[in-house]
Length: 308
Image 1 (cartoon, helix red, strand yellow):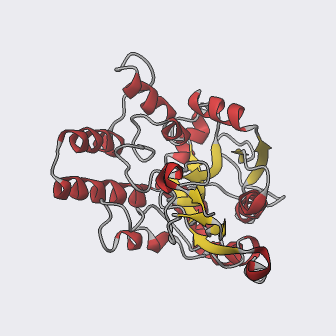
Image 2 (cartoon, one colour):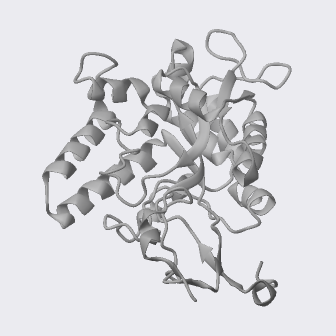
C-alpha cells in the first residue's frame, strides 16, 4: 500500500481502534450449565492455568505479524478512565509458563489419563466446547493456535464455529462453555458495560445468568455475589456520580477485580489496520479517529469533501 501511494494518488494512515480492549480473548462462562464444568471454571487456578498456557508472543508473531501486544484487561490510554499502570495489573498471568499451568491443573486434581487428556472429578474426560464466530483474518487464524495451546495442557478442546447471530443468541441463553472473541468497551465502560454483569450484549459471554438477573430486575437468572456483586455496585455508583476522579477510581477497582479473577482472559491487543485515503478527499483527520471499522461516527463523514 505504501509503495503504491504516489502512483495511486492516495495516502496511508495507520489506524488502531480506540475502543478495543482485546482483539482476541477467552470468556469462561461462570454460569455454565454443566455443574462439574461450573465448579472447574469457578476455580481461579484453572483460569490462571489457561492464561499461563497461552504463548502470546508466538501467536503475535505467527498470526499478527508482530503488530499486537500481549493483553489482559486494561483500558485504552485515550479513555478518560485510564490510570497509569493499569496495564501492569494482569501482567503476572501473561507470561507463557506451561510448567506452572500444568502444576496448577494437577493441583486441582485434574489428572491426565493414559491418552494425555485430563479427567474431571466425575471421571469423564475434560472436554470443553470452545465457540467462536471469526470467519476470516488474523482473529480466525488465532483460534486454532489457542485451541492447541490448551490441548497441550491436556484439555480436550472441541472447536465450534457459529454464525455471529447464533453465537450471540447462545451466549445470551448461557448455552456456551468457553468463547473466543474480541473485547470492546475500552473507551467508556460505563456506556458500553462489557466489563460489568449488568447489560450490554457481550457481558453475557462471561456472566450470562448474573447479567440476566440484573436486566430482569431480579426476576430471572442468578443474583451475583462476591466480586460479581461488587462490579454491579461499581457500575451503579459510576452512573450516579458526576465526578470524573471518582469514576476513574471506581474503574480502576473494576479493572483490578477483573485481573485478579481472570473470568475474561485477554490474549492480544488489536494490531491496527490501514486507512487508505484518496488525496482528492479533504478534511480527513490524519490520526487515529475511529473506534471500529464499522463505527464511523468519530470520522465525522458529513464533514468530508472531494477537492475540485
